[in-house]
Length: 377
Image 1: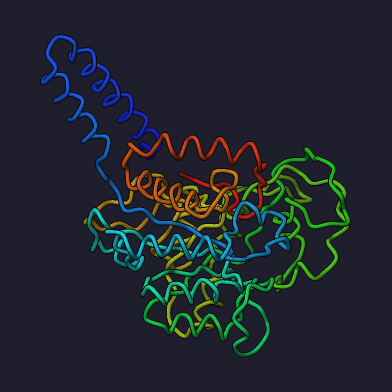
Image 2: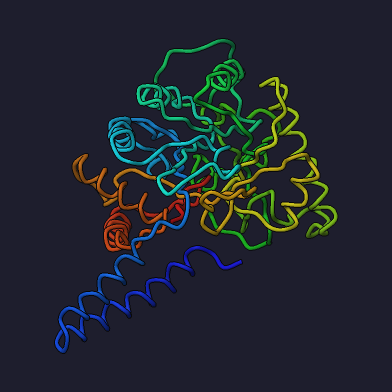
């Protein structure tokens, strides 16, 4: 299947070329030339899919996350973005509406990966505007505390009681983000790291910590001075003491991990969980088969446009980050947000805005390869 980026490049080349041809015709026949340009712009502006916008942390101080600047959005920025959605002609729909094809050219859905504790802050804004959203929790990161906690953007993850409470609200759904969000070694090639801090290699370090990882940031990191080349634990054949895993061994490991994650979250929520959000938004045919064997039937990590008005079982997503143009006032954040939303829907007239913003942001921030840190357009 051709991915949406390739499709957009082809559309841009075709209709951009038509627009340039129309401008050339203007000198000979102004009305004909302008008509050609208008047709090209209309074709470039067509919305061809349902955008799904992905958030992670909504916090004023995400410094506890080594990749915080790439996945966290300030509460005031998030509030302004949701205000734009509520005041615009966009219609925020539950994720299941996208799966069922109950969508139109104004539909958009919202996701929150990792089930950080600060989702409680985002939830207040979503309730204010009656905007539905789906939260994805990894079973090894469910906080062991009991009962609801104060609504704030403190470090950490939601506990089981909080997840159940959100899932019981009509606006929200909680679904699965796998078990441990880890990366595993895929070769013997290594790079040095500071063994005394949690850095961008933290997802690999998680693979060395069995069981509950919900308060990893409060502990000393494993004393690992060299990190191997890694890949998502759910799609890669890992290097073991006996050598590289066989396909059979990898598939068995992945199926077991996903089965345990699904069983754990089903027990927490008291209902069957069949929707899997792939960590890092990465999947392979082998991994997808393992997920189906574990009982999942709906997935993220698609690369095509989400169809409008048609059923699907795999969703494509666009990750949202803060300081989208490298910095600036709130109105600039909303401008870039609007442009990214339109491009995610297929409206390519906003590409110059998103391209310029991405370039400005890249000048200020490096891209950390932490959980879900790499944004997708």
